[in-house]
Image 1 (tube, rainbow, N blue to C red):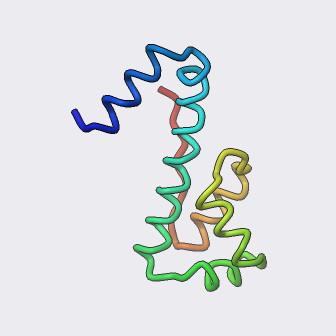
Image 2 (cartoon, rainbow, N blue to C red):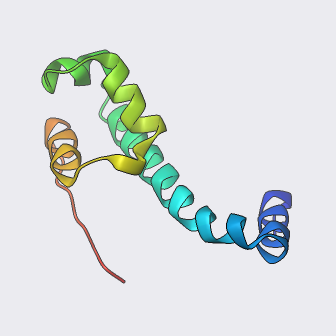
Length: 91
């Protein structure tokens, strides 16, 4: 187990608020990372993607770094502009 994971586990045990908010924030973080990786794997810059989506580079950066309030339709457009499709699963 990594030091980071040890720290997270310890904080979750000690602080209920941290524990409650951690998973939601972590999921948003993972979405942003996945979007950024998909864009980079497609060999597209934030600026190029912004042009494809008729938006600004700052909007792409915000989506990749703060994905907590991204609409499903935005995620679909993001994926489509990279030649990908979006799959949503419920576990």
